[in-house]
Length: 361
Image 1: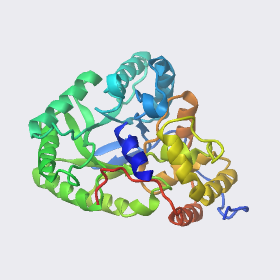
Image 2: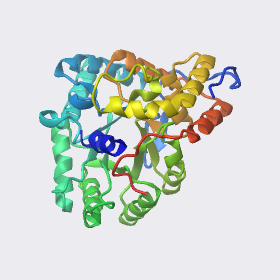
Image 3: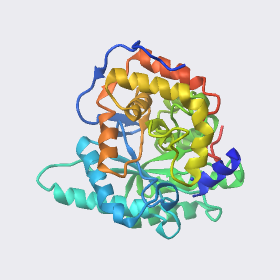
């Protein structure tokens, strides 16, 4: 069953009882800035996978105004990095997330003509579809993204996944093509997604030899995937790029809103949570205890943990309340003892979150 959930998700994609964790370390209000290769980006971003996704997130175009309210709150807080993809949006809504990002940014800048606002930094991912076999097809994919965004350049053009696991002959064309995207001025830097440490080192060496700046690498990174991805932060430091942590709340499982008696209404998340929740009880209990000590929500603690690991978390936000919770997660820092305890419990989870089927070693 786990394998079927894994396939379906991609293509449609002891409890602590007392305080050990010291006191909250406050941060300056607002989202800070952090290096990502040659770029400077916000220390937290926003993922847009849910924008246009009917299957997993019940998207409806009537939600666009509410999504814009979330976007505006994040921009006002200092979030500039927005992760998206040319494949985001189901069926007839394919590319919807990029379209919305373009519309939202133009509207936001139009509403703020009296004050100087930093431009949003779009980090879009280009899917290695089977028909993208040449370097020119990758460039054309980037141009398609720019047409949807109605812009002439993105901050970061990323490869959505590696083809090395199933069609290694395509991999070189993907690397060449994303390099061409940079050299043609269509992006400021490049990035990769779902590349593990070994494949990241290989592609980073290629980019370095070619003089193409690598800004980010992203993987599914949360307390429920921690055992499988501990080496990535060190590898990113070695190749001088920033790790983006997508799904830092594990599709909502780490928000504390769900339990075995209260599952998502329907769809693949319902079955996935049914399988994962029983072995995640100690972790959720520890999150709850830390959240209580810091007077924060469980979701905020989970996001802050990813920040403390030196990553840039990119949680999604479709409502104003979700945006508020996300940006507030950056206004403090967990102490080292709290992070260590969360690490320990995360490493003991018997059934962690399944990895993306295209994740490489």
